[in-house]
Length: 355
Ligand SMILES: O=C(O)CCC(=O)C(=O)O
Ligand SMILES: [Fe+2]
Image 1 (spheres, rainbow, N blue to C red):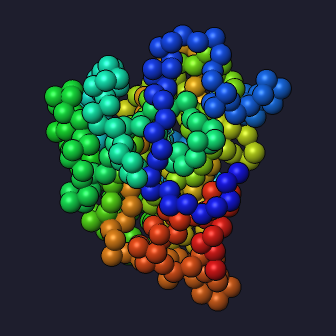
Image 2: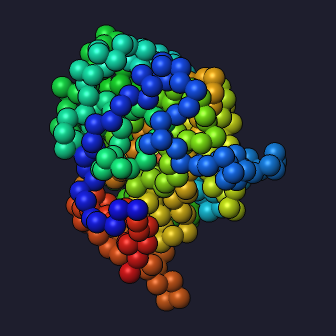
């Protein structure tokens, strides 16, 4: 792999996977091949049907009578998995469905129309693919549109689609809903850890919110490609709305990949590197990937949630002391992002943040 440090806040332009899929090829082009037939992507998937991503009910976290029990469940979910599905998160079904319809409407547009909102050289935002830094790099079976939503001054409105016509207002509303949900979810995550003060959750009120809308077209050789290559998120937390009714997202648990079975109305929440640092590694950002299939397109709408830029990224003071040394460095928000965008692609990002 490329060991030279590059600024990764940009992406090279690559072909649209949706357009490739429309050609109804028998074989995928070599640039997408990740696996040979023998070390098949499927063989590493857990075969234990009882192994399921934990399900958390926010209504039980809010209710004083059931809060302690549900906080204990949340603690184990964060500690043992780093991911859970959440119900009763406060985001209405209408908001989710409206967003799904707009994103579907966008990806259904002819390529020539979508290109209007394409990433520009040296820029990650817009319609295209993330983190393509060399002409030799293997590609994901994924098209996406990536937009920054909060703070409002970060919005590059010239990259916000105007087609379908309600896209912009729907995304605006959706990101407000995601921000509200994030503040509550982070509050409960810190409570699950026994932290009293709400400084961490409140820092998400002025936080950064980036939305990545993914489209995974059907693929003629799904077992030889990957929708999104295994990674952990650099966010505080990530909220993923799976628009499909069949699995595609998988998390690594005890060396095996576990499918996330979509639940109607639920949101998938995973810990990102920032909360990993703030909890001094008690809650870890889990590895995950997306797989694709032969027959059905899948969409997901992913919100990366970061604390505001005035919050330092450091292990919480309450969690360190005698016998509990900090395992991660103290960083300003600016230092954290600079480390991320200048990271070496062949090294673990989280390991580079260790003291
Ligand atoms: O679409 C998915 O299921 C996974 C997306 C993801 O992990 C990401 O965008 O960071
Ligand atoms: Fe991710």
